[in-house]
Image (cartoon, rainbow, N blue to C red; front, side, top):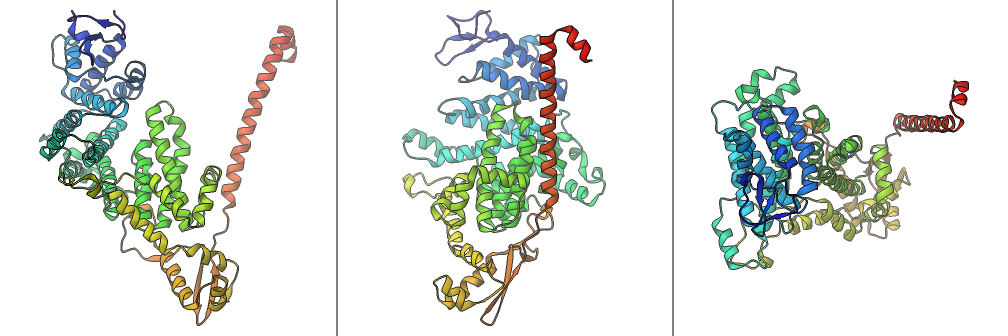
Length: 550
């Protein structure tokens, strides 16, 4: 067989074994790729979830890296012909064709230089419509089963491509007139209402909210799941759609609704629902960011801290998929920046390992943030925040400079909130030194007027009042009572300030556990070293020395 890089002149004798390249010539499809396509189709047709996992999570990334790092995978019609020939002329499984097409366009978004064309974006959108119609457009549940990672990737990529298209459509600069005309006419492609309708339809079809409420109360889930919700395919698509709605509302700037859709999910125990690390980390990122934007800093810190601790536990399992590992590493780095930002506004204790990690990598940044350096805060926010979108198309008759910029608007709103808290770190640092002092004395120390200081003290009390939920399941508890969760509190009696230190004692248990684990690692390393040294010595001394030692 001709190798992948060798061109085949003229019309190939075996069309089912060839792929049309970008320059119009044909290249022979490698045998491992043909085998993969046939195996993937057979796994889906036979409902073999284990084989689907092997094809999707192991073989597809390896073949991409080997043959298609800079090139498109074969087009769907070519793959259909190849698989059909292997089946003796039978049509491939419909779901296989849809899933392969989804993977084909996902590869273009991720690996092809220049990104997808408008035609690619539109074709990918209609393929997602085919998938959701396949799942939702039946009176009885489909019998296919798919791995959780694949189902999550479909929902995650669906929202990402909507986000990417919206950003592409908003950038009018350097677009030709025919491109703008095409965008004007494509009002239904990647429409916000269509995206929301799909996600809500999956939630309703699966009865996932009813199942989650029943699970939380310890009831019988099967009693409320319904015909569709009993199937794992629908159940997990519904669950992932809730996460997708959270992400979608967050990038649209509706942070309350982003938390509200997850009111039935205990965000601190996501591993109870599914073992998909990318889903759990993404959820914690958007929930933590939404908490921060709603000035619920303690909830934000707790969520981000738990997510970073979770990432430390599972990052070794992601090493086999470089694309996923890179994505997760970028998102955890963003969460580290968000955690630094939240801790500068609301100091509190975090996990010892997470604290050491942040101190090692971001010590200089933390110093600037603690001094309320507005430039550093703005840069940190810019890096760590998601890419915000406008839910409506741009006005194509106006230049790009006059279009609505959601990123700039939300950033300015956040900086405005920070400016209101600019004096809080100074007040906190002085109050830590005293148990009682007069307002006049503190005003002198801070070079301000007593009347101005009194307002700033009231601002401190107000900003440190947080809605703190008993657990993360009540993520959107807007009516929950507020409480001051600062490391110190105070009250004013006349002209005197009385300070109460509420700092929580250090958790010595965590310190002992961490050092015990370190000691065990050292002991294991010494044991391996001892075995290695004796093994080398035995090899050098020969059989007699080995038998004498034994």
